[in-house]
Amino acid sequence: MRTPMIVVAVDGTEPSRAAVRWAAREAELSNRSLLVLHILDWEWNASRYDFDGLHFAMAQEIADGIVARAAEHAKKVAPAISVVTGVRTGNPAAQLIIASEEGALMVLGHRGSGGFSELRLGSVSQRVATHAHSPVVVVRGRPDPYTGPVVVGVDDAESADAVLETAFAVARERGSGVTAVHAYVPVPPMYAGYLPAAQLQSEELDEAERARVLERLALWRAKYPDVPVETLMSHGTAASVLTGVSHTAQLVVVGSRGHGVIVGTLLGSTGLQLLHHAECPVLIVRES
Image (cartoon, helix red, strand yellow):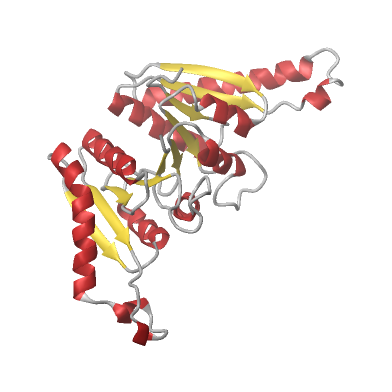
């Protein structure tokens, strides 16, 4: 059964510690408890050679130390929150996906303890962000992303209202504003040939698109009247615009699916690019 608990995955790396700091602050803001969870990636095929169980006992001791230090770090960041720890054994991605059914939010570092430190996003984080049952935050970007607006992409996807409501609720929780980003490519007239989008700009089209965005935002502005809202229109791709805005944002909120030719995918291309390139944490809202 899912609870209001926040689950943060830890492995002792610096990206993991950044995830703990973010999760602890979020637990404090939202009045939730925090589960600090480590997955012991034990090779059961090799366990047949661990005749006396010493190797597994040593691995378990190391895992216990990882969660204990992470819990201590969380309490330093947010002393008032309730923190529990857990160590589970198995495939890290699979176990974290299972764990995502237990809490309201899963928090991950952008890169784990594997041997590919040059990668922008770890394989475990990407798999969990793609398949988790709960919303997922991947903590990445600058070290202290606690100022600036909550940025949200506005599109015509079926999950758009869920994404917007999440962004407004999170912004009110933080006492910040919302920057609503709508990126679109103007439809060229028949005579336009291969003119770039910048040369196809028209005030009429821009105003029509802005009116559509404002109409979509109206419900949430009325529900959250204390949240300041800024709209940003662009002819660029959604991923590039949201990545650019992330440099001064504290959080980017996007849906879990695309709405174009890849609507059937589990994570849209915009969300995937943000998980690799954003300069602040990224919240992936799951479809209900």
